[in-house]
Length: 87
Image (cartoon, rainbow, N blue to C red; front, top):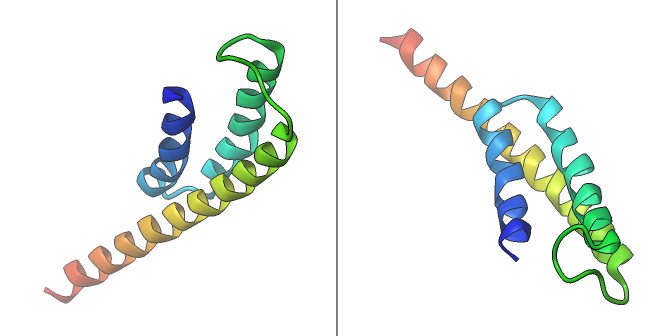
């Protein structure tokens, strides 16, 4: 459960802190790797019925929140840059 929550929070945070569009790839790789590991029994208690739907949903949500993080980070940099140039 801790790894699940960490991934849920880390991907958007990485997007926010890096402000790089390449960070959107992290959830596109991270969530499938997480579920492959669960399904194969490498960690956690395995997967239940319907895990594929959750995999797709979390991958899409992870990518969307990471895109939002990148956008917010870039807008904060733009606002900060504009404020410094005016003084």
